[in-house]
Each structure stands twice: as C-alpha cells, then as structure tokens.
Amino acid sequence: MNTHFDSHFNKQIITILPGEFYSTDKPVLISTVLGSCISIALYDPDLKLGGLNHFMLPTTNRTQEISIEEQGRYGDFAMELLLNDMFKKGAKKENLKAKVFGGGNVLDDGGFHKNRTGLNNISFALEYLQTENIPIIANDTGGIFPRKIFYDPQTSKIFLKRIQRSDLTLKEISTREAAYKEEIQQQETKAGSITWF
Image 1: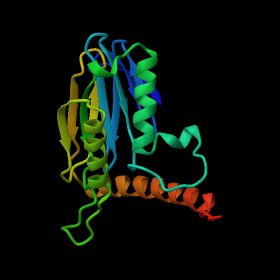
Image 2: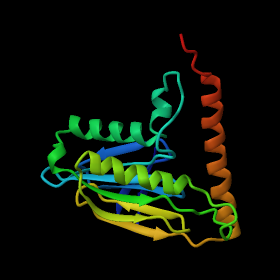
Image 3: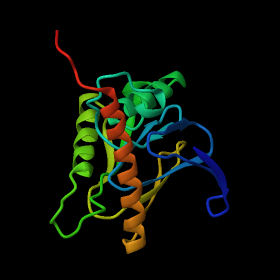
Image 4: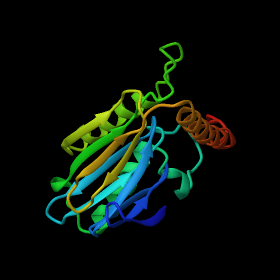
C-alpha cells in the first residue's frame, strides 16, 4: 500500500495493489488500477465506513496453506479479508452495499486469443455477492479498457477513469499480469499434488 497527498482531490490517496485491501471511515480516497482483476467496494451507510479490495483470480487450487501475503490475490480470500476487517470496525453485514469494477479483457487481440480471466473474475464477484445477500448498487465490469478508480469510503462514491489503450499501456499491463500469474503458478507448483490414502 502506498499513501500520498493529491492536490486535485485535496485528500490523502491510499493506493492498493493486487492482493491488498483497505477499509476506513476517514476522509481519504482508496485507489487502484484494474485490468482483468476485480475490485469490490463495500459500504456500510450507517457508519459511513467503506472498504476496497483488489484480487487477481477467483480461487486457488493450491493444496498447501497460503500465506497471508498471498491470500488477497484470490477472490474467496480477498472477500473474507475485507469483510472481517470491516466487521472489526463495526460494520453490519445486513447494511452492506457493493460496487464491482474491473474484469476487463484488456489484452484482447481481436478475438483470436480471448483471455477468460476477467470473465471468470466477474462471475465469481457477482455470484459471491448474491450468495452473501449483499446488494450490488453499481457494476462497471468487462469491456476492453483498463480502469483507474478512486473510492471515497465515507460516501461510497467512485471516480472512474477508463485508461485508453495504447501499445505502451497494453505492454505494461500484459507484463504485470503475466508476472503475477507466473508467480502464482510457481507457488501452486511448489505446493505439490494431492496424495490419496
């Protein structure tokens, strides 16, 4: 997590990276950049408390325990981490509202090599929130553009900017997502396979 003051918004910006989350009732903005990843913003209007996560994949098939640093990369863990953090601060599940962002097919090459990561992430997010009975009040997912979001946890407002695709942007996003996926795959390989007894 990085923190800096932004003169445009006249607020502290908390920037979260893949695998991270943050919740607060303070006058800050929580920011992240999304490609095929998903961010779910949760909000308790009674407490004016909000939180945001950023996950890369819906679940993992690893057989060994996942470290705390790695858990937030997977949707099922990322949601539990954010929810538990907000519950500790007094949020009530029945009050929560959600906004869902990301899941773009930002590496779309005209349909020849469709990347399903974004679609899988979207499906997971929507199904998870439905199962948990958390209403979705905004949904900006899919498409081909990366997104930069700024979330105001006191009001639940989202400032969203679609990042125009350029060769440089696509290369940067492609490199970053490939590195994250390779790191996850290496960790899953190290975990080994299941032996049945």
